[in-house]
Length: 245
View (tube, helix red, strand yellow):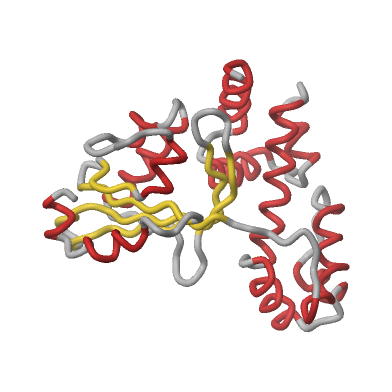
């Protein structure tokens, strides 16, 4: 393990992270170069090591460039990825076309005026296919999210569908799905957008409307925030990965 990792006092913790098959973990230096990548990340990348490399050298363009910009923003003092107790919902894309939703947090390490690097964790998001037990009252609400994302109901409307107070509804959604109601709705809408971008020739503007975004710029911001690429960039990426296969 690099001496820089030992100096940061992270060696023992990072060793444990090698045994988490559903969590990607990494540490980067102040220039955004990998000091450590856990076993899960290396296996998904199909690489024995990424030490000394930036994300733009590891992930295909333009995805790697987007990740490198994100790292630089965190290192420069912009708000960390995943504020408070709510992790950032992201769709991770890997070489070869692999993809999966995860909850991500990135934190700067070191002093505010002299960052030593950053620590990142991304947990795979495993959503149940159906509700059961005490959470079964959520079925009507989650069915509405799945079928009405093009004209999404508000959280209070969804809570009424579940016959729950808003507070209880939000708590049960988080318990069953690991997400806030807003994140679950965003995931559904962005997932629909990725399918349409990859599988149809519809314009980006039409896809935005079909996924419930009547402001094109709002759609572009939401999509890039979740995927790391613009809608057009994702369409080009998906087409390139499909051609390789």
